[in-house]
Image (cartoon, rainbow, N blue to C red):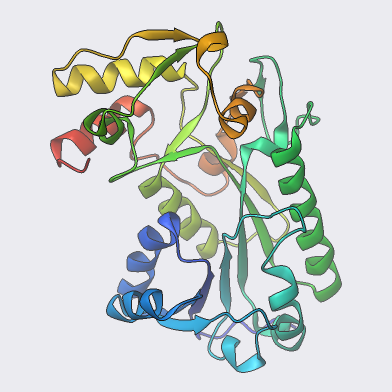
Length: 294
């Protein structure tokens, strides 16, 4: 039987943008915080934030790395050889699975593939998936196999384009790096990092093992419209429109434009009871502008 005690400790496998916004919420509730890192500089930064660093050296984590841990957030991106966290965690998890209350895997909406702009949800059959999306599909499957084998309460969070303080179109405009690329009928979904944090916290409060969630706001929008709105907030001229064919995008950027879909977010609202703080990019960018977080 799974332990239902009040241990409340979390390991962040990868302490990135999402983790830095979730960690303070958990710390305020008394969670013990641990996070993996690979160098002394990052370890010092973690300690300064009240997070115990777990140094990665390429070897599987020892069982004591999970001492006091009953929640795990997995945010390491897969590479050509697969998911980097799974081989480092599986042995320790095998010995501590019974006390785990919640594991979250941060995936992407790229696993849904292309749907030619149609509305989809978590149950829509997968469209054509590119190489990056396929790596995520494979990583989800690998974690699902381990979760089934060890009876782990694993959840999948398929994140749309993430923005927030220091990572938004306002910041891109300020740096002179924003571009308005126009591809007819192309839309993207996005999500503010503060809403990601509250969605993860809501799932931790009411686990539903094996469940997948689309993590996006209410409005899929053309990317050039987001830049235009950011420019309006800043009182500057938006960059000129560039046709997609003339944009000279990197292979990675081109891969984003290969997928076109509108993603429903009903499940995070209905099952987790989440009310988005930033239901569209307009509320999100306006708040960032007002707080000068760009």
